[in-house]
Image 1: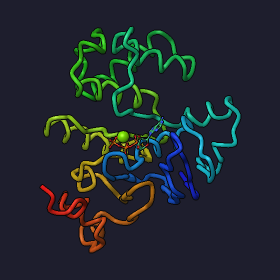
Image 2: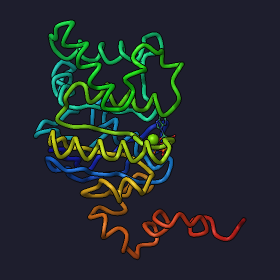
Image 3: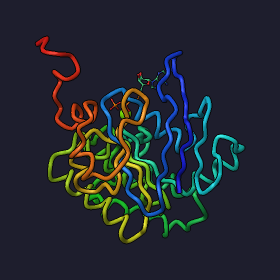
Image 4: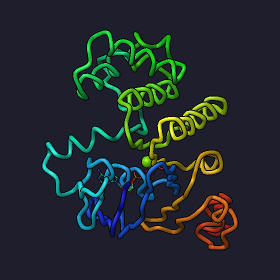
Length: 249
Ligand SMILES: Nc1ncnc2c1ncn2[C@@H]1O[C@H](COP(=O)(O)OP(=O)(O)OP(=O)(O)O)[C@@H](O)[C@H]1O
Ligand SMILES: [Mg+2]
């Protein structure tokens, strides 16, 4: 399981995460929502040790990842697949090579096994035809799906998704939502999904956390957040900008 205890982080001398605490249980699909700039991507980077907390802890299966050596952290990271907001592919390699590289860093697969795993991962996201394309030749949505394929090819215990469906068309969004559900059901993957798309909360969340200016504004069931009377929650759920800036426009 993932446990976050009193996580605090300043970036550019500005507090971004202001003492967050929550837990993600095994097998759970945990969705973090919040407006742009609320600290969602920064939070996700702490869960995989790309950023280190100023204070507080991130525990993965009982290990405080902020206290691990680089080598120990690499071992924990093997359990985690991450889908970055922008895809984060290497521009100088084809889509297939990007996935193969990730596989080679994990364990000793034969060339044939790697080829099969690359093919299978690309088929899952409906990109079988794109294996030989370079990232610059892909649309935004294709890049996103390629990043998805790379993470899932590693067969992780945890998946972290940063805006997995933002910028995708409604059909592709539905496909990605279904995939996330399938991974949960068939592979028992524990997921943390960061998004500002409420459809994900509705379609795949077991639990939802609303991040507001680096603090937890809500942590509970999707059905509860829809009924919440809290003004910060209401503003996000209804998308009513007048609740934030008044009737200026
Ligand atoms: N490396 C960095 N250095 C300085 N400030 C940073 C850095 N990374 C993020 N920030 C700041 O932290 C805040 C939160 O950023 P973050 O990327 O987590 O937002 P977000 O909730 O993911 O937004 P979005 O929905 O737009 O992706 C922002 O004010 C951002 O400017
Ligand atoms: Mg972000």
